[in-house]
Length: 90
Image (cartoon, rainbow, N blue to C red; front, side, top):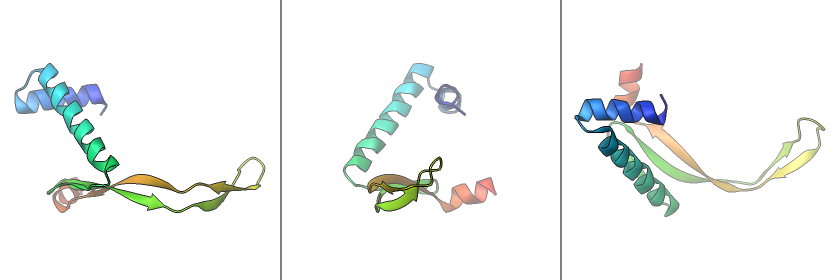
């Protein structure tokens, strides 16, 4: 499902116009992004939680040459599915 399809589904499910559904989705994405930038965790009970974790620097290999390369440390976004979501999908 892409963004346009998600907007259509939200619009139909919540009885909103497509414009309102797009505004709601954009607001959710922006708010979640801002919270994660600050290092906060975003938890939606039953659905799951988004969090930021630190990935340490490590040594990798260039697949073409086989030479070792250094992969820098960085922050990564993680999503952990909630129990209700897991139970529904299984």
